[in-house]
Image 1 (cartoon, rainbow over the protein chains, first blue to last red):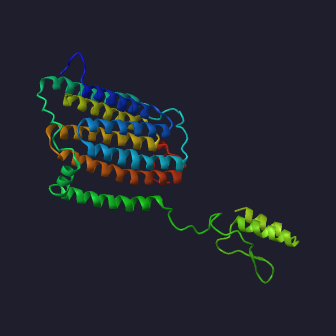
Image 2: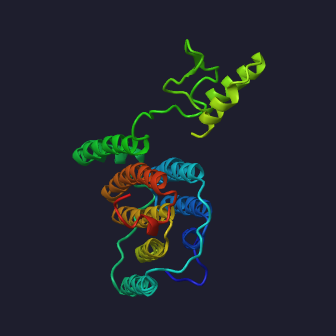
Image 3: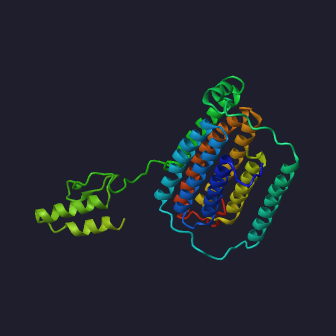
Length: 233
Length: 100
């Protein structure tokens, strides 16, 4: 197993494992969320390669399509939409969290080391030969629609709930009472019979400015005061 | 052939990095991405066991975990947008109380 010359699968494992770990560390170390997201895409791609070395081509494809494609596009879209700046370095309020985090990490790494030491003595099940059809789409589909049909249906209900929840959360609370600038056509205001400006719901500062321009063009001097009142809002 | 324990160790280290990230990060989106990393570490364990034992169940559950992650991404990012709209900040320390 541990020859002097590593075999090709071992080289691939070391290559993609190191890539995954490096990208994961970079993700945590970055202060800019966008760079973190790109490092996470690196983790996903190297994990997909590891899935390929485990003879799971369907999962590898889904990993790239769903994770690196859909989910990360969503995350990057939100980062761009919110225009997040770099994390500002400021004093921690809860400073004891750092030693707690280091302690928990040490415990988990210790568990992994224990598992590795155990693995040399415990019998390792033989990896299936490359001729097996475990990772292929057909066998996954057969399992999903026969034995595990109920979890699959529950998952589809979960997706529906997530869809409804995301739309409910992300939409503006109500239809706004005042039209936003750009929402309304820029046209001169309507005058009442007495010569005053009739302010309708939906009028904005842009409407007032258009009214002022109209007044100036027609030579009426009463315009600026009403348009200034509109600008206050 | 690669021992199964190598995959398990890699997965454990990646999970650890994710946990550390959730603990030390204060940007909500970055904490969210660290949770995705933890889910992926568990996925690697599932696929490794599935491949080594020749059983397709592990890969089926990876599929379901990915679906849950997608649902989590949709709802989580919706919550993040709602928080940002109210507080103009993504720092979780700014959102430490439930009222506005």
